[in-house]
Structure formats: C-alpha cells, structure tokens
Length: 380
Image (cartoon, rainbow, N blue to C red):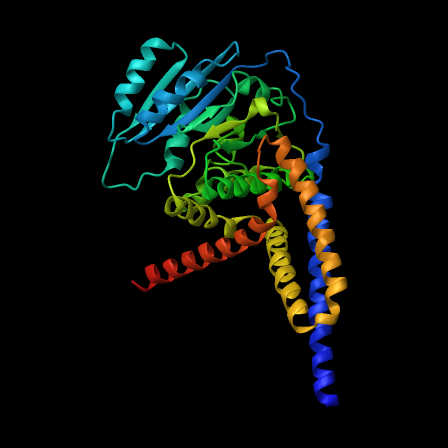
C-alpha cells in the first residue's frame, strides 16, 4: 500500500511539475512576445513618397489570377514604381495575358523562363531573375494570387524603406469564406503572423511570407541569393529572412492598408499539402530560432497532456489545475483576440481555444508524414 502511494505520489509530482512548467512557458510567450503586437505603435499616417520601388511577382500558370489581381497592383497610389512579372515556364495563357496588359500599363515589365526538361526549375530561380531585372534598390515581393488590400499598400510598406532598414515584414492574409476550413486556415495564418511579427519586435526576426515581403536588392546579392539553401524546394521567403534578418535591419508593417489578400486553398487536401511543404524549412532555421519555436510548441503539447492526466488520474487536483487552465485561457483569448484584430482578422476568437489544440495535432501529422516520405525516398 505504501509502495502504491509512493508511486502514485511520484507520478502526481511529475505531472504537476510538467503542468506548472508548461503553464509558465505559455504565459511567458503570450505576455513577453505576442503582447508586443498589441502595443506596436504603427499607424495609417502616410509618409511623403520616398525612393522608387520594384514589385516582383513570380507566376507559373497564373493567367486567371494575373488578370484579376494585376490591375490592383499596377494602380497603386504611388508616384514611381514598376511591377515585374516573371513567367516561370507557364503552360497556360500567362504570356498572352501579360502581353495584353503590358500594352495598357506602362509600369508593367515582364520576363520569361523557358521550360527546360534538363533542369528542375523552382521559384527561387524565378525570384532571382526578377531581382536581377529590377531597376530599383527596394524590392517588394508578392504572389500572383494576391491582391493589395488598398491602393496604399505600396505606400504603407514604403514608409519603412529608410537608411537603417534592409527588410520589411508585412502581413499576407486570406479572403474570408464560409465553412470550418476558412476559420482554420485564417487562424493558422494569423497565429503564425503573430509569432513572426512579435518575435521581430522583440529583436529576433526569423521569417517572413513571400505574399508581402520587402528587402533591398543589395542584401539579396550580398548574401549570394538563395545559395545556402538552393537545394530546398521551399524557403524563398522564410529561409532567406532567417538568414539575413537581424534586430538592427528589420521592420514590420501591420496597418490594414498594407495587407495583401490571397485566395484560400481549394480544399483540405491542398491546405495540408501546403502545410507539409512549409514545415520542411523549419529544420534549417537558426539554432536559437528552432529552440524558441520548439519550446513553444512543446509547451503546448505538455500543457494539454499533463492537464488531461491530472484531471483524469488525480481528481483532487482539479481546482488548482482548472484554475491555471482558466488563467492561461483568458490570457490567450485577450492577447490573441487583440492581436488578430490589429491584423484585421474577424470571427476567429471563439474558435481559437479549439484550434489551439487542433493545430498541434495537424502539425504533428504533417511533420510525421514528411518524415515518412523522406525515409521512403532515401530507401528507394
């Protein structure tokens, strides 16, 4: 009996210790990192126009999206800029669409990569060609399926193009739709943005998204472009930022006017495929970045696991356990709710407690699937 009590007591101490540790980790991330986004003093004030800008878009079989979104990109309220579209070996009507629109818009420039079966052409090649073609020092990147949230998108991003800055991180959201997938996609996108934007404010920039990202051409070529991770399919945005971004040279812009809006994935299968591709780059981040991101996700896993164990196996603990769970939940709702409001994301707050757990399971699934696929390729 004494042995059973001692064994049970030992397990309780372990579970309680893990729960308390993971609770403190979660509170630390929300209050030390994520809350920074709430107090960021960005505004919608327009600066005087600065130096000219080159907008670079890489497009493969994007005729429909280019026809839909280029007018908004080419009609920005900004005095001097160019839009460069790199036709990345498209098989659809992309070339015809670009030729027709070039006759209408004098600030549209195009270049084309011919299909070559001897080489595996990825987006990194297209981005590099676009930057080589750019006439201006500052380059603003977005995707063919993105449209600016306002005619002042370029102006709002441009206000950070000052001497000490070399990189500007923006927000690229998704158009709102009906259904559960819409909420989950927008929750995941806004949570990731809350992470990388707040980390940048804390002086630890580690990624950006190619849907809304600006940097100097000189930084790109000084870094030898994507040379250090050229063999990795993804990473034209986050791996490059992780490599060159530092506290001293990075700024963020979160005004609603500065956002880009993309179409959502067509279904669950496409979204999971995107998630799996994006998760392949994380292992190549800087060591300290991987530690911080790993600690956050591990803290969430341990928090929910130890919470369930304490409630089911040690019912006398429920007042303390549920009390700490409620405190963490309130902090999460307040910080996440105010942060996504600054990102102009609506109707996500009520879903966030569920999605906080669901995204752990989805990420574990995607990482496991990637590992299995990688092992299968090596075996073959």
